[in-house]
Image (cartoon, rainbow, N blue to C red; front, top):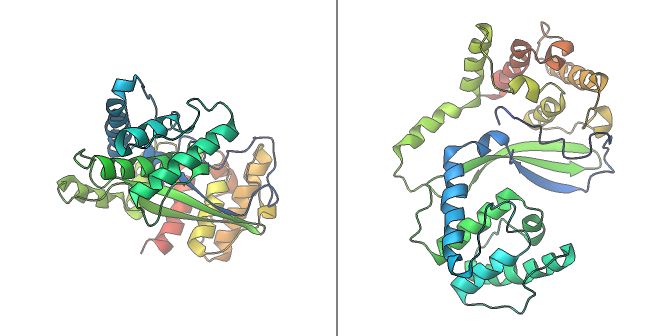
Length: 305
């Protein structure tokens, strides 16, 4: 999710670039990714880099454990095991350093089982496999729950939210959805939250189209949609249908693949009655800002209200 707005890197290119992915490549199910724009949110940065990281290091200072990254340093269970012992008094008979993946997973299973008993969350948003894969969203949910339960006096930033891309994969295709996921509750004491209403996609697109008209650069929006992948997933999400994986390239590695994807997207828009006849597929592939914005504006004009 993480993955919403401009992206510096396409979240749908996690596979090897030279591998053409089809329905058999994926395991059926859902996966979440924080949208990259959410990762730039100062409130998320404060929660992750200052509050949670500071809480871990302060809690484990006496044990001379220093954590530098919540994404990279919790996956093997060592830090979580020490936090469990520190705050819940639970000392499990586990190897201190789990060096293999199987040993790390066994350790995480034991630690999370004990943590879950004490966190008393009805709907946990983390699991062993996600923590071990260094999933940032799951790790943040776990740490926020731990701070709230074990040291409620620690002041977490209020109303921290992230935009998350949810992909549902089946043998027939991919359906995507963009959701808002709450990491910390709104305490109602931050007047600046009112300004968040300006994040409405319609308003942003209208502003960006105006800027493109006077030649100003829109950060990475053109590049984000230039291979057609996110555009196709967005059309499927908004219109509520699957686009078969056999119809397009999920990991386009040539100009022809990107042109095919964008041409398909424009064809679908025409079938839906959204006319963007002035825009050619080559415009979007060549990262023409004005052309890309016209396509997006057509979609959000229909679905924004």
